[in-house]
Each structure stands twice: as structure tokens, then as C-alpha cells.
Length: 275
Picture 1 (cartoon, rainbow, N blue to C red):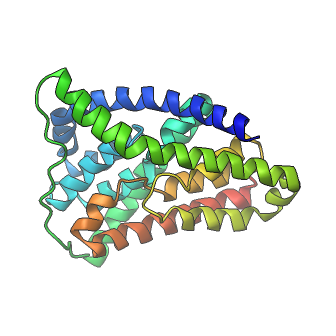
Picture 2: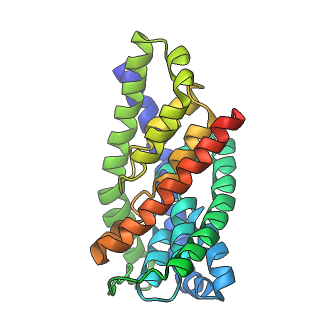
């Protein structure tokens, strides 16, 4: 079992690495254009933020957090990107089941737009004050491929992301295999759909890429419904909120409360509909 899980984890992390390098390069290449795109009229900020959130990884969420902390985008855009982003887990979904991944990305993008507009209206209605002033510098870039591979590929992807992500993948796959060898999860889990939806929303509060993998793995095994996977993806932010935590705990709490409650409501509606 250990050898099987290790080989499967290695296969997944290899595909993830290739995808991460590609997305990182695109983010660097079009960084300035992305920032200008996000600074458009408020009506388009939310749509733009949600679209960017569907891009795998945490870089684009960092863009929105940076612009929000400088007052260039509103609370709706911040909520939209956090709802639509799947963090590093997006790479795992693409590597394991591209069709499922695209479906999740599209649904989260649409719900991110809806949730973003609702969040913006709430912020206006309650006149929520903005706390904290950010001085973030999001990975300043120099020209040249050597700098990209040294700073972005080696220092950022290989040293910061891959080891932890591989460990999460390995432990998740191993844990599910052990549980499946001892319990009939196909009978146990579907009967507790509402509990799983609540659990998925609460685990999503953790500002870390990794815990969400349990729901990806269970869904790929046909052990949980789509609604649970969707709620987990909506609720969790990967590393996207980490820069905001360093700027203001109040702003972090506000967006976390909104995305968690919104995710729960979506999950309850889907549960009632039997999805």
C-alpha cells in the first residue's frame, strides 16, 4: 500500500509541478496587465477578480489582496477571488481529473461573481470600515530566465510549495486507503451529507493548501457528492489570505466569515436539491 500510494503521489506531484511552472510564468509575464485589469470600474472588478481566482495557484489571489489593501478594489472583489480560488489544490484537481476540475472552476467562478456582488452590497449597506494599510511587494521581477528559475521555480515552487503539497497528497491518499480497507465509506459518508458540507466549510477556514485534498480524494473515489467538493472549494482560500492576515486580522475575519457563510448556504441549497 505504501509503495502504491508513494508512486501515485509522485505521479500527481510531477504533473502539479509542470502546471505550477506554467502558471507562474504566465503570472510573471502578464503581471502588470493583470493589475490594470483589476483596477477597472467597480462593476467589472468583481467579475475580473473571480475570473483571476479560477487560475490555479495563489499568485492571482495575492494580486487582489494587494490591490484591496491599497484601496484600489472593493470588498466585493476580495470576496469574489476568495470564493473562486482553489489554491494549490487546483493543480491537483487538474492533474487527477481535468473534466471535474474545469467544472468546479466554472461553477466557483460564477458563484464568486454572485457572492462578490452580495458582499459588496453588504459592505455598502453596513458601511464597513477598511482596516489596515498594506505595503506588500508581490515578488518584484527582474528580466531574464535565470532569475525566473532561481526565484520563482526553485525558491518559490520547489522549496515553498512542493514539499508540503507532496506530504499532504501522500498522507491524504494513505489515510483514505487505510479507511477504505477498514470501513465501508461508500455506505457511511453519503448518509452524512449535511455534516460533510458543514465540515468542508469549516475546514476551508484554514489558510493552508492541503486540508482540501481530503475532499478531492474522496470525490475521486465516488465517496462524497459534488456539493461537498464544491463547498470545500468555495470556502478554502489556499495561501491567498496569508498576505491579508499580515496586514489586518479584522479584514481577514470579515472576508472569512462571509465566504464561510456563503459556502454553507450554497451547500445547504444543493443538499436540499439532492446534488
